[in-house]
Length: 295
Image 1 (tube, rainbow, N blue to C red):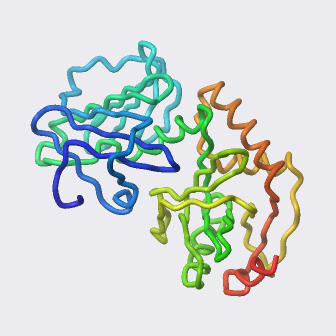
Image 2 (image 1 turned 180 degrees about the vertical axis):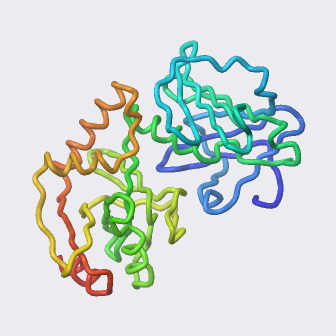
């Protein structure tokens, strides 16, 4: 699909199906790896997004700013909807893309500034940051949470989650495990956790780190490790309140939404109560893998 255009596609991330359609006769959809791994066919969508060309220089973009990233995007409340403005220095003051979404983020419209893409025939309208913003808002409305984490499935089908901020060792951990027999890496940087039928599950995402590892697979979550570089391999149990605080610090949560925050805190509290959480201080070599396997 990376080399031609389509008018409709469906993505499935963490068992959430998002349908994207192109409006008008001249817009085509284009998608590439690793997102291409998450394309599905004939799946009933939970979320529907329509995309179209427009000239955003003439559009009213007023709204009550809920959060400004200070960089590539800003989210506002406008006429009962959320409006996400995507900006770039190359586009100047005019956003190159604007998304309007209903409060539950299950329906949306993305308008793409045609003058900015005048030599482009096909594109992915939910490209960063829209896809992750839509997903984090969907999850925070009763579905789960996205975490800064490396996730892997061992040969017994058990999911291990290695949580950490930037430079904590997520990509290093993924590379240490990558060539082990029977191991599948779900992501080296972003993992989604959901609770299904009373059990926590972890899901791979297309939003990878430096190792570019991404898989649509999933596994039951059995253990959480908070990564920290050390002089030797050792670990220590964490009390649930401390684990919740660390999980929240590594989560993608719409802090501007009180209802979303309340759900996320309750979700993380349940997660820390049900899943063993440990701080893992590790040496960046194969001995760290052996240490975790023995544990």
